[in-house]
Length: 478
Image (cartoon, rainbow, N blue to C red; front, side, top):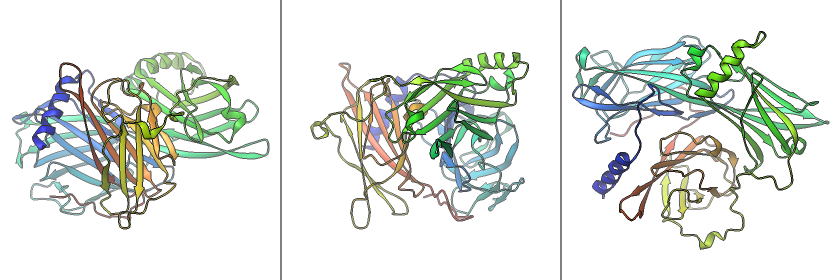
């Protein structure tokens, strides 16, 4: 069975489109590098930050995982030594520079953000001067790293593989960008009542927020650099407003979006539970175009990104939205997959998941059904809240997929989300307000020439304590 799964995975990789145009990988809490020659191997570096989203003011522990993978087998390489640099992309401030080694295929480093401007590493070095990062010894980095939301640059130079130091000519340097997003809630006053407006920033922390009751416009400001050389390295600017549907006067408006006074296309999702969600998803080419306009403005704030949302009228009756509520579909008639189960490593939550149809084709509408249980008693947990996000076949966050704190047991994604074959990831975060996350992977692999797809689903539950005790070690299994 294991060989069969490996064969299918390799087939999926061969059938997928591979590009190496950019030096950067850029993802929400994760990234995969381009392929490089290192030692006698051809390898790529996978990096993941958990949790990938934090709430404003949270100082919870973050875990950075690095895995060097053989590009041919896609298996992790053991005994890798890294020279690691972590820096803020927006300011280029170096937050960590040291050496780490793992005897396993994964190097795991725990970060405990603090208000100190200096960083310190608490751990044990091996004879070669590398901090041991395979989980056999406690390892914690304290300081500014991952304290604030935003884009981070991860630079890892491979100094050793298979437990052996490499000559300089055989070493390879990898560079990736990963995003730590931040959720923040603002209470605004309108006609004698208070309402909630939430933001999710994927680039930097918000420095100023304003709601104008007269115009009903919203304005969020964050640090930015509009110089073209800086903007050139940003694959995507992503930002979200969440407007409570209880705020009827604002939620029932049509909107236009602005970035530093330049109108920018936005996506408005009115089907999300409890909120109208407004997405700004501005790729590099449009950012460069805006940069030219901003730099030509005499009074422009060139050191800030100003995100504005301006109402332009009421929503028309029957206005179209991406409906993902399931409508009048009888769920009992759907072709559901077998139940997939996983228990958290701390034994706190049992998650059961099914998807329909059990064979997923491109452009299918897909239903995901979740059940949450107490793993000791088997008793079903009711009214469980969680955030849910979807990643596409290239492990990129499908920006309009985020739903904040839903209690729905069935999630529906229409065919516009599944536009190509490959691996998709459904990520549930902060399940039941515990800080725990559940990840479900769904792989669609065409095997037969007649176009029949075999669907294989696997699940792993990744537990992260957002408010871990200081210095709590995370152990790797050996």
